[in-house]
Structure formats: structure tokens, C-alpha cells
Image (cartoon, rainbow, N blue to C red; front, side, top):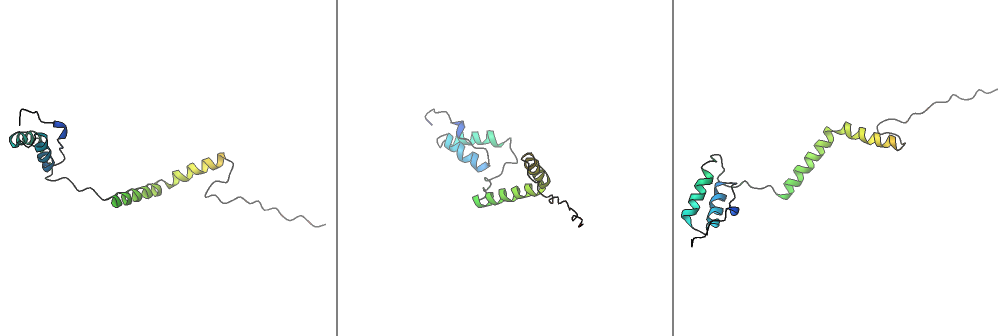
Length: 111
């Protein structure tokens, strides 16, 4: 419309619906130009979904992050304890998971 060039920075190629919507917006509601832009982008992407995928809620994202963090900790428990033990030994303290060493001294003989 009015000889104005489309603003291609507005085009989102995440789904067919997004391409249609943003192409129409980029062309200032010129349907002919928007359909040309849509055809240009969509013809090379046959597996493009019809609609954008729904983003998980914030709670679901936090829950997934916590689960993966605890799983990582469980999987790498030996390396984590080894690192902590190394730091404790450098500080001169008793390492984790090792029972304290007690030396039994026999009683003194009575004379």
C-alpha cells in the first residue's frame, strides 16, 4: 500500500499462523503482498506446525528444572562428595563418609 516496502524484521517463522499474521502486519494489511511473503517462507518448510506450541507454565518450568537438578545431583553424587572431601582435607578436617579413626590404647599394667 502506498509503495511502502514490507518490514521483514516483523516476520516470525515459528508456525504457519505466525507467518500469516506477521506477513500481513509487515505489509500493512496488503493481502496480495502478504500471501506472496507467506508462500515464499512456507513453501520450503513442509513440516511447519499450523500453530505455535503452547509454552509450559512457570510452575512447570520450575518443577522440571528442580527435577533435573536433583537427578543430576543423584547421578554425580560420588564426584560431588569427592570434591567436598578434597576441600575438607585441604582445610585439615575429617572427610565426609569416613568414620573417625580411633586408636585403642591398652590399659596400663598395674604393678
